[in-house]
Length: 107
Image (cartoon, rainbow, N blue to C red; front, side, top):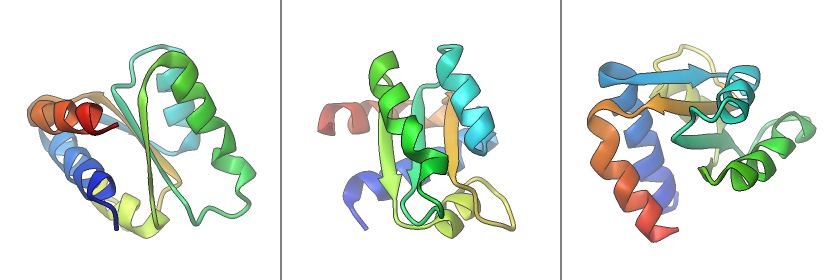
């Protein structure tokens, strides 16, 4: 797992408890379109890949940092879910503010 992916998952966990996140591709897409997403993370093992294909493009268009993690399961666990999720958007970073700054500098 890349350093960015580790930090992104950590940021999701922090934002989940101290800020606000959106889970799932539809919610993530809406957060991006409304301009409220601070960070977007999506899983590489989504099948079919078309489900999340638009997310990196939309994030780039909106100037939002987008990070890929290996599995839906990791992403779901970081988001506090029993099941995997294809994508998560951080809407209010809460205590994850510093982590997001580090991630922005790295990318």
